[in-house]
Image (cartoon, rainbow over all chains, first blue to last red; front, side, top):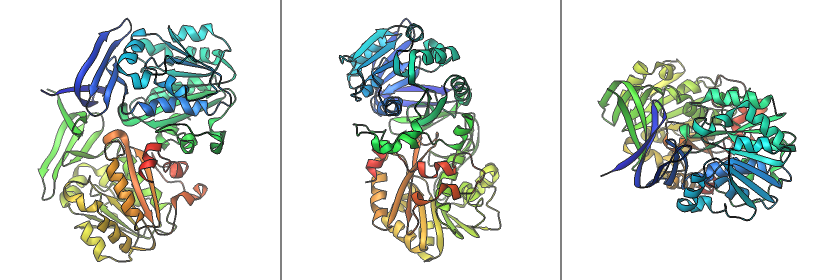
Length: 275
Length: 275
C-alpha cells in the first residue's frame, strides 16, 4: 500500500508526497498538528493542513528569516521570535554570537513539544541557555514589551487560524513599539503567485509604520509556488547598504554574504507588488 | 466529477492540478504530447508526462532563457533556438531589434503545430518574417552549421526521450563550433534539489569547452522544486560584466535590468554544485 500526503496549496493546485510513516496527528487547542515522515523531504511538520517545514528544505526558510536581518543590524543583542515553535529560527539566531538573549513566543506549546521530540535537528537549540521559550500569544507579548528588542522575527503560519492577527496593521504597529530606536523586524509574507494581494497589503501597512521597507525572496520547494517572500521593516539600518565583505562566514546552506543583497532583487512582477 | 493532472516530479513527490478540459493527447513520433486546460495555470503543454509550459507562468522560463544572453552579447544578429517548439523563446527573442534572424529547430513538428493552434499567446511569433522554423534534429543542425550563430539557446525537455543527447559533452562541443568567435550559449539545466548531479556534470562539461561559464536561476512554480537553473557558456562576453544601466527597457514580467546580475547569485548549496 502507498500512502501519499496531498496538500491543496490553492483550491486548484497542490503538492503530493509519498509518506513512510505518520508520527503525530493531534488537534491542539489552536490547530491541527501532524508530523509525517516523507520519502522525498524527510520528516514534515504540518499545521492546519499546510507544510510548515521539512527536514530536507527547512534550512532555506530558517536561514532566510534570520540572517538578512541579523547581518543588517550592527549589534543585535536581544531578539524576539514570534511563532517558530519548531525552533528552526532560534537555531539560526544562535549562530550569531552578538545575540545575548533570544525570546521565542509561540502560542501553541504542542508545536514546541513535538518538534523537540520528532524534529531534533531543527529544535535542538531551544534549550540553549541564551534562549527563553514562552508559550504565549505573540500579539499580547509585543504589546507588553515596549522599546525592548533589537530584532523581531515573525515566523507565523499562513494568515488563517491563530496567525490571522499576525498579518494586521495593529500587529506591525505593536512590533514598531516593541523595537528599540534602531530596531528591525522581518516577517514571512507568503508567495507572489497565489497571494499577491497579501504581499501588496502587508507592504502598504508596513510602509505606513517603518521608514525603510524591503522585500526579499527565497526558494522553498515545499511551499506554494516555490518562491517565498519576506518583508523587512527597519527604523535605521538598510539591508541594501550592508557591506557584504564585512559579513562574517557562518555555517549555512542557502544564505551567503554574496546573496545578502541579491535576495532583494525580485522578479519584476513581484517588485511591482511592492511599489 | 473532478479531474486532476498529477505529475510525479520524482518517484516520491509531485504536483497536482485541477483540469477543466483535455485538448490534445497524442503519441507523436518522438514523445507523448498533451495540452490540458488547468484552472490554476491555464493551458499547459505536457511532454512525456512533464509540464513544459503553462500560460500563467511561461513568461518566467521564456524570458529567462532569452534575455540574459541577448543582453550580454553586444550584437546578437543571428540566433538559434534548439527545441522550444512552443515558440515562447522565439517570442522573447523577437523583442530584440538587433536580431536579424532567428532559427528554431525542433525535432517534433507536432509540438509546433499544436502550440500554434492551442497556445497562440506563446507561439504567436513563430510566423514572424525574421524567424525560420525547421523540423529537424537539433544535434545534427549544430554539427552542420559551423561558426554561424551569435547566440544559441537550448530549450529542451528533461534529459529523457529525444533530449538525452542535448545534455552530452559532444553536443556542447558542437555548439561551441556552431557559434561565432564571440558567441554565447545558454541551456536549461533542471533543478538543484532533485537533479544536483546533472547540474554538476553539465557545469564540468561546459567548463572544459567554454572559457566563461555562469549558472543562474529563476522561480518557475510548475517545474520541480520551483527553482530552475540555466547554464551559460560564453567565448568572450561575461554576463556579470554587463553595465545594467545600459540595458534597454523591454516589456517583461520577470526579467529586469536590476535582476540581470542578481539572477546569477545562487543559494550557497547551488553555488557549491558549480565549483
